[in-house]
Length: 360
Image 1 (cartoon, rainbow, N blue to C red):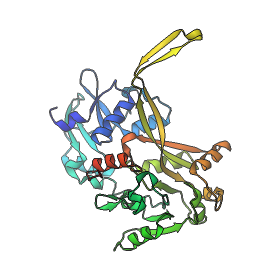
Image 2: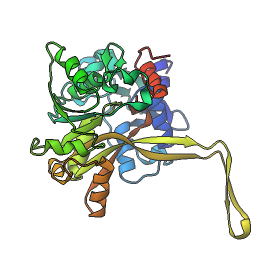
Image 3: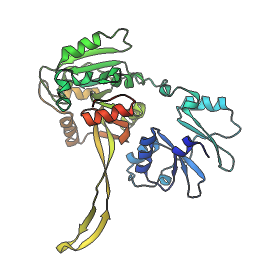
Image 4: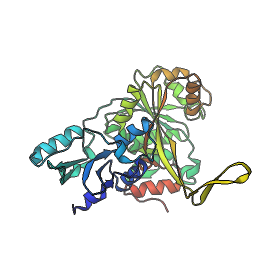
């Protein structure tokens, strides 16, 4: 097909999972059309398919064809556009291939052909509380943070904190608890000055710097449901509902959202045996790691296990749970779905990706 949009979302079935994720990041889509060596349409692969494969211990170098679903929702030429539109809306489908009886691809409908892109998640209503850790000094973003606290650094016409809040509101989360310390009064004043807020915001102040989880002890008894925790210098552009379902279905006490980060070593690497005898050489290998993004889903009873008025990182809580043989999960997202603005080079990359002007 000659449609450039179709070409951009097409991938060969022999390609591996990591290459599919990278392509999704480049084109900012979560679904791809899969074709075989004869350029015949095979199936759709989504970021959800890849995430489930990773959670089931498939290697990132696994060929796409090995994880494709048997039953995929497709359309046929007999189906009307109105029926296709309704199906895409009901199942929040990013693309809908139209395939004839010979499995030939006739046409592809995109979400934006029918709807405003921003409304894909309108029918998701998680209703969970959200804690945003906004008490840090922002030393990596000085000198600006000597005057403006990091959560208020602008991204376009809004502060970073407002962008984070907006992402959660898309999935029906409207109750926010903001941990503050450094320039706390300035952050409070900024939000007090916003009229007609469509969310509830509660500030709680650390008596002193308490690490990435110590201030959570101040929320003991506040929640009866799992709650999200996010750093104030990240944006996660992924399916929050899928994160929640994974957390509940696996009965995790704590779920970390992890980004799949790829590092290319620009040299040939060597493996040797006894006395330095060369066994294997690999030219410019790529290493893949799961990185802690600073975004979590936590069961409320864990608040009782955080010491009061003590410096305590969230990694300390994870280590405690692991030592006791308790359930900590990691939900994988693509590298491009994790937008980090905690230092200037990353801030400028994120601003550019979102269509905003960065700082020179």
